[in-house]
Length: 215
Image (tube, rainbow, N blue to C red):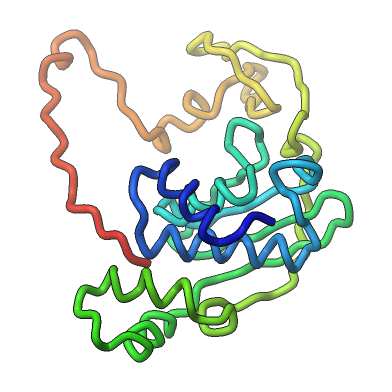
């Protein structure tokens, strides 16, 4: 495993800045790999690991840097639970460990560095120094990984009978004899709405919220 400082520099480059959430993510992934006995996740052990992340925040980018797991490689699985937590699965042994950030870690950071007023700076320093037991809970878990979720899984590409778009990885739904994509089978669950020609110019800018770089 690369040293903490090296991984933090890589995380900063990948994410665009370094923050407390990045440091937690790096530490979390290092701990997960250590508990599984995976010493070189981006090299010799690169095909052993699948990681489930439970939040789409800074820590997720950091976890990807440490583990080498990527969505495009199908080795990074996202579950939108809003939790600063991740589960690390060793495909060679079937062992899996779930690690979650302790809510008390922020209090530990304040107690360790009360002289630092800025919360993010306080946490950034403390999260480098605090032991794992002050930052995380760990639990051994069982994960049943369906073959279609495995990295490298191949399946026929099927066209949706409604929209005509291709569907990969067995994500089609057969309804009344028609093969449909999930968006057409369950239109109420789509993350987008199709506009007709009269509505195409009605879109308004989306104002971004202020970034909050803590956990």
